[in-house]
Image (cartoon, one colour):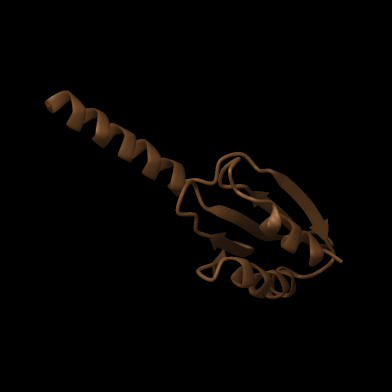
Length: 109
């Protein structure tokens, strides 16, 4: 019984650690839009798909997060670049759909 509890606790900690960091980027694109303008375009689209999507300020830009009940969160980091912004998408899991990434892509132009 003790071994089961240790194993269950270990799995829980690994799962929580996966939610804390976005992992490797799935896609990274440049846009001529300023970080605030790009994030303002993406956030309502994400909230339509994932109502608990949030945005917070980070150094030189914004981080949008769409929580996932099954796996790590989907994350979009938008930071200032030389001629606009760089948008980097981190897909939470291979189980996640591509709808959030496609919504972010629609705002690039």
